Amino acid sequence: MSPTDTMAACPCGRLDARRRPLRYDHCCGRYIDHWEERPAPDAQALMRSRYTAFVRENAAYLLATWHASQRPPALDFEPAARWLGLEVKAFEPTGDDTAEVEFVARYRLAGREVRLHERSRFVRENGRWYYVDGDQF
Image (cartoon, rainbow, N blue to C red):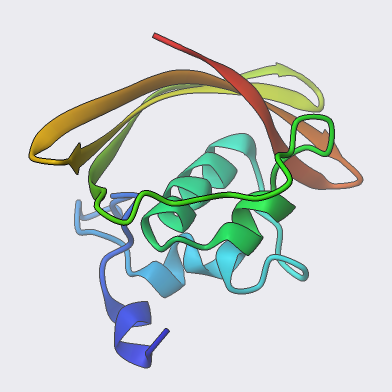
């Protein structure tokens, strides 16, 4: 990744207090580029950073943040997919170390817009949040 990429708006779409897009390095990049030292502080931040990792096709980060009980052996990306945006609909802690995030991620594939609407489950172990699984709508 070039330094210019870190200055670009974060793909997750998070805004600052003035409703301006946050830069990648001030948003999800803090966790993706430094995941061993700086884990996402909550399930919503992890979910946003995982969306950004999908946009950037960062399989290492996605696999590292997937709970071992559900983690696939490898990830394949659809090279023709063009990610269009993320909307976080709900974030709900469900226990001290569990949470759910409902989101809609949009992408275009073969000229067709696709909506991925999911309620994802997350768990915190040893101070780190992990994606477990989710129910799609």
